Length: 438
Image (tube, rainbow, N blue to C red; front, side, top):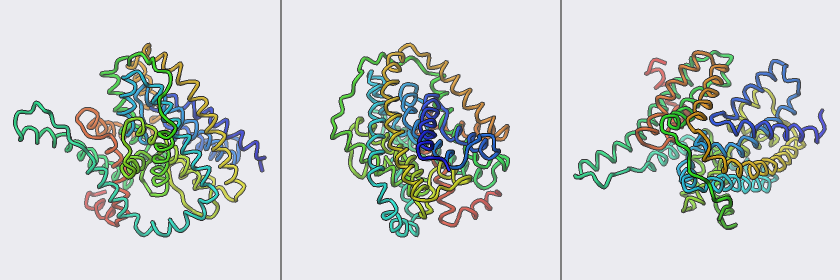
């Protein structure tokens, strides 16, 4: 059995590695975690299950925090932060990119502090909550989908001469959003029912789909129309402490909801919490999304360490539980300690790196970066999933390009998970799959 300090050391090492992964546009933490699990299963990693668990904790924290930099400065979001892209991009075009990055990081710190405070009560609180929610999870998930789709807004041009033209313009945008959700949902149903990937790549089943839906469309947009953003003269941020606390707590509530509810991502959770608490303004929204992302990824991972709870949520927790299941209050306490220490370390890295990145932004070549990042994403997909994965990625890219170039929110691409799993929870997924010949 490894000592406590050794396990914390593995978490710190994972934080450095995760930070490096987070700085690469389009590279997701699940890609690296999947590679680590492959090496661990084959005995090539040379560490035990406890060390692997804490390495992945640090990897997650480093990636969550440092991925804000390319997400803002290079417009390369992942599925959990895609909701915050528009306000953050607005800040970037106003020369306030570093402020947006730090606001997301501060939101993540508020979420981390909240998780550390409620950690001793998780077991006591979540057991009754789980008993209450579990019988109603199916219709709650349907309600979340309905809210997400009904929240799509129309964009009517003032120059349209007639009411009929304005109606057509509005429904052209709304229809693109609905089409994105339906197509991505059917895409997910196919992947979950009859995946073309080999059985040994089952843990990376959705990797090519996520690369196609979320990574490549944005990179293609940059490659075709990208230009260097303006200079970033604003080195500091203007948020008041009350704004940071309010936005952070709002995002934390949404992230915790997403970490308990199946399938719901941190971005959706943050959007729901923002509407529930009536937050207004880009600054509060950016803070809440940074907090939601952190609370979702770390909250779902922390739940795996609660002894006897048996609640596995989030991709990282599912991947880790396939090879190692933490047991005992000692590991839970060490998990909480590692999250606190590594989050502080990761934020220090974000603070230090965001300033030179802001100064270099005007000298970057976004198109070259998009080509390089896209190549990394494609090569990673090919390495893990071979030719069938590349075909899945191509289909996902075609769907993901709809909101980028036609209209609708990119969050609708999450139908790849929401649609098939909600149908399965309602008991009609197998019927539809059989009707479609799957």
